[in-house]
Length: 199
Ligand code: HEC
Image (cartoon, protein in one colour):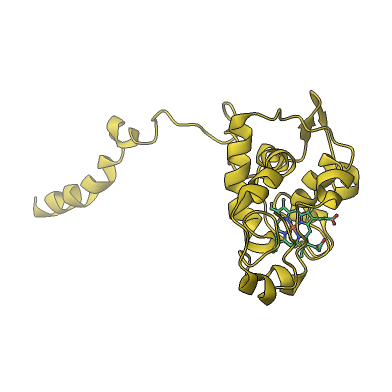
C-alpha cells in the first residue's frame, strides 16, 4: 500500500503537464515570423531610394546628386526646420551664421569655408549642396549616407527631407540672417583668419 502511494506521488508531477490548460500560454495571439505586414523601418534608416521630382531615383555619390531637383518647396516651416538643423549640424564647423567666424571654434583650423559667398550661394547647384550634406566632402563628414565617401566618414543623422530643409535655409535665408546679425568685434576678427567681412 505504501509502495503504491509512493508511485502515485512520483507519477503525479508528470501527469500534471498533460492537462489541457498546460499549454494555454503557448496558444496566445502573437505574430509569428514572416506573418502579417512587415513593421515600418526605423526612423533613421539609410534610405536607398531618393524621392525627387515625383519619381524614385537612386543616387549613391555627390557627383550623381548634382542635378537632383529640390522636391521640398521653400516655406516658412521648411526654413524654420532648416535653420534649427543648420545650427545643430553645420554651425559647429561653418559658424552659426555660415560665416566661418569665431562662433565656430574649429572653422579656421579645418578649413571650413564660409557658406554665404557666391561659391556656395550661386555657383553650386542645390543638388550638389544636398549631396555634400548627404555624402560629405573632402574633410567634411556625411550627414545622410556615409557609405558615399571613400572612408565611410559620418553618420545618417539627417533624413532625405531634413537635408533639403537645410538646403532651403542655406540658399534662401542664411545670407539675410548673417547680414542682419551684429557685426563681429575687431578683436574677434583679428583672432580668426577665416572671418569674412560682411556688413
Ligand atoms: C566637421 C566639420 C563640418 C561640419 C559639421 C559641416 N561641414 Fe561643411 N565643410 C567642412 C569643411 C572642412 C569644408 C571644406 C573642405 C571640404 O570640402 O571638405 C566643408 C565644405 C562644405 C561645402 C562646400 C563643398 C564644396 O563642394 O566645396 C558645403 C556646401 C558645406 N560644407 C555645407 C555644409 C552644411 C550644409 C553642413 C551642415 C549640414 C556642413 N557643411 C557641416 C566641414 C564641416
